[in-house]
Image 1: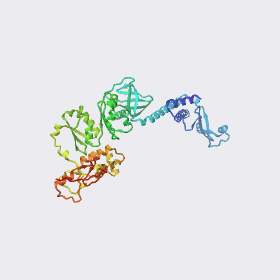
Image 2: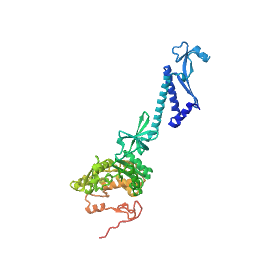
Image 3: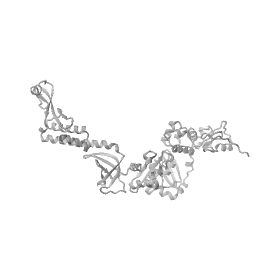
Image 4: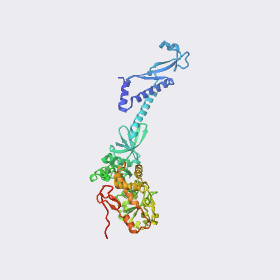
Length: 490
């Protein structure tokens, strides 16, 4: 094998170039040298041997009767000395020895080859790493300049800018560094990966490695918010009713979460349960503080008030407001935290008494007191309903509140694909927390006595399965148990 073939093979194996890219680079280099020698490369033809062991250069000329430009033209008589079948107007390839190129032309060719290989190398690296943005990568501390840390990643160099570092971390030469790729930059020497250890997705990548339940989608991360070096809050939920998402992330005796904390150099981490009902989610988000109650001040503007015991106020706010600030970002609500003493001085009666009702679904009669209620008929109109959950229910035909409740009580709602039992239970809780159900009799009149009204509002449950039943039923719609109601004798 020739030296050229050996050099090409080495480029392909060690640098990762494709054979086509090496071939194109050599061809461009020869044409650059040809142009430097003859003034043009338009008529330069480069041909390679099948095994890439040799390359031949030709000058393609047009046969004319009277040469004007000898670089691209040849006299008919001269051409016929090479081939007797030549005719005027034909083209003929004349072999050129590259060794006859002058020194400046050879230098130009080398420069073109070097530039071509460099660009090809950059393109190959870019193609390899462009789909790895957001992924974890491991390297070793190399040097530091102006606060930026340069990391040896093998084929490429990584840079960990000051703004993407945690204030807790300090490095020395050859220290092992784990980070995620957030950007790619082309440099004169190749490609540089921009790394981050402050991004919330860095925490996500570590947790996913430590918690098998997240890897197999049994437990999912709803959202992560972080102030690097100080505190991180992670909201999780489970796709299986029998799996505790928080417990899975914390691990037995806290083993899993301690591994994450060590990687973050002791940064505080709060693992909490995501809840589609905003008041409960806000309570969870303010952990480790205990919250007495949450009031929705303005649902449209997403403003809420959290009331905490006096002893929990500092914990709920956090150092320099850090805890409540992270809770705001996690829930996407503006949360105002008050102590129970401060809340007692406020008039919260109007806030807590405003509840949505579906009374008119079952009765056309409106009482004076019902004027204080907002009428809703669909699940998507209720406060705190997750948009995705509402969309799935609407598509499945269960957007109507009455229909949802009926299907939930008889168990048929469980057949809806894409929703877990936990999510369905959460919707049912929101309905019963915000909706007042008023049943209409066949001959209901506005003059019914208070005693009858109280009897209608009394709830009954199946003695076998606990499902909600009514006085006109003779069989449980859920388990099928038969029963009858007897009036108490006075």
